[in-house]
Length: 258
Image (cartoon, rainbow, N blue to C red; front, side):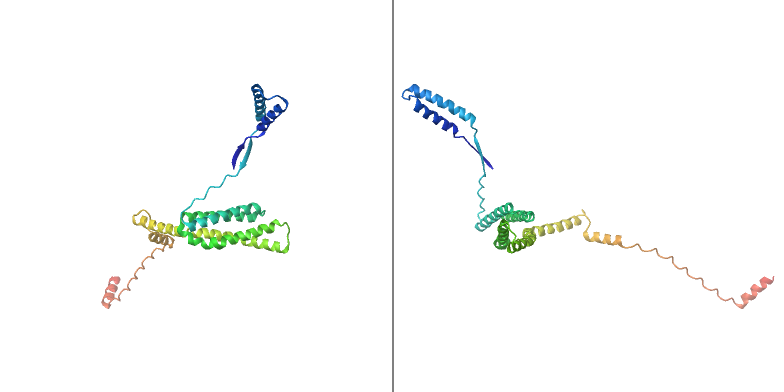
């Protein structure tokens, strides 16, 4: 708000009254008469000025002229968007329902961010044509209908049905506005994802981080259960003794007898 200080007109009126009264009741044809009248009027004027304070008025500051981009279509879309946001602010102040007001605030913020993004990147203007030509004006139409119905102060069948219908669709409208805003960042999200992948590969190639494939292999090995120790090798069974010859048996018998 801009403050404007206005001087009180009462001292001027008081001075004029002194001159008038002096002219009515005293002679006013010599220089001395004029001097006396001027002094009297000046004194009264100073007293009145001291008693009467200046008038301070607050007036809204004029909105700055919107900056032109040089693109006629873009300038038109931005102007329509600014008017839509201003209408949303008015509806927010007019509608008493807290839930509807909170939804309107979200719509304002999403719309302002959409317009700001398109102004920064005019090549994305075609992406919001349907939003500007249908979704935004239709939303304002519904909210204005709700405002008119709410202002009636009665709860008839038609009024109640209309208000319930608008209340029921507001969450979907807020979601649609936010998705429209999110869609404008699709290219940027893809670029960042590509940069992250390239950065990871370069760091792995330079030995500054583990290769994702190598990291996955290590993780798989860490999760693999440890194998039991190899069983001891089986001992080869002894070969059965070969049968002795008769001569050997006789020799052992002779030895035992001795």
